[in-house]
Length: 114
Image 1 (tube, rainbow, N blue to C red):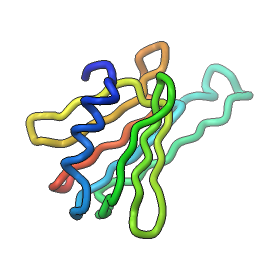
Image 2: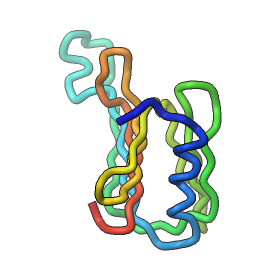
Image 3: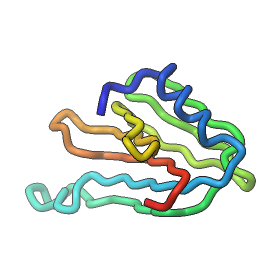
C-alpha cells in the first residue's frame, strides 16, 4: 500500500460509480484492546461482499482522510484513512493504520466478491 493521495484515490473510485459493486468495510481497535487496559472497550464492525450501487464517491478532510459513498438509500462513510492501493485484481483498497502500523479501518471495493 502507498500513502493515500486524494487525487489518485479519487480517480480510482470513479471506476465504481453507477454500477453494482461489492463492498467490504471493517473497523477495529483490536480484538484484544482491553487485554492490557481493562478500561478500553473493544469495538469493531465488519461487513463483507455487500452489493451496492455508488452514485457518488468523495474523499475529503485532512490527513487521515474520510471517504463518503452515496448509495441509493443512504451513505457509507469511513474515516481515518491513511493508505490505498489498486491490487492486481483491480480492487480498490483504502485503509487506515494507527501509529503502530496496525489496521484500524479498511474499506474495499471490487467488481467481484472478495
